[in-house]
Length: 370
Image (cartoon, rainbow, N blue to C red; front, side, top):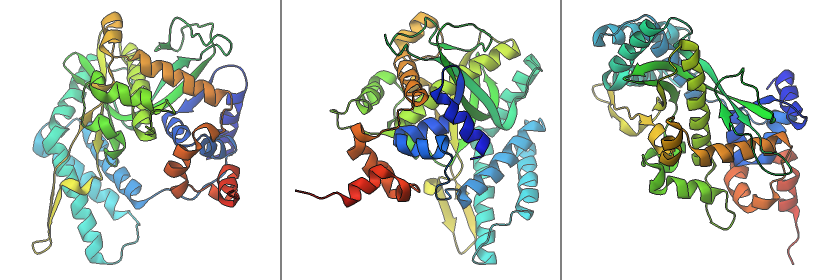
């Protein structure tokens, strides 16, 4: 994190509108103190960049560049993606144990590309072209297309929020304090009357229950609310962070629809994992790799149908309200993890790069029993 980023986060303590991002929200949900170290104080923790992230970036760039070329046929799209991956791989300087390992990892990436094209690539490419034909204003293909949602914060005295809980139009006036929360998708495409944002991720494991359920009322709502109840014996930061991210992305897509002149569309959010090896089959004798690709539309699991019935938009009042509460806590500098320390310490401390300077962790390590 740069000094400028740290300075921007530190201004969250003052009055007015400032910004967060969905990664910062996820960090805060895991541990408020970790958020303070990373995003307010600007301290560098242990390097969490991995070779997996680098390989995902290769696939992300290859797929987006192929989509940008406008190829909608299966073979043409696959050839464009392979050609771009080959060029990127030539300059990829990751250190491997051997040439055999390097060849194998390239085959895995190529198999993932094939699986993407076979599973959703052709349909998505056609959807990008349809959307481009409807509006030429704004980029549709990234990677990392920026989106944002502006959330009004609760009044610190009454807890009430402005009548407009979240607003898609950055020019809309509001009397309440607000925070802009940033997110990104890798491309946007049209699917019938919906505009869909797609983001490439390593795996779907952080989704937890969201990966297997597609109805807010079928267990998702209960787990979400229980996470914030200290007496419920539920602590699931990645699951909650995924719902927050879905809320931000869908609201950000509404803004993009307004920019494109497509205000009458509903918005959806899809994640596609590019490093999940659970569906990969390797034949070491023939030196071949085959893989399958699972995609997940998070929209249905996020939608509160009661809210949808009133607004006719993909929203969830429960998630939006809690998102505003968490943003308000961050804005107010609420970084003390004491209230949920047992949950937080078991979840966050084992892989935290800040334990060496964390007073909460050190106090727990050196305390005297009895």
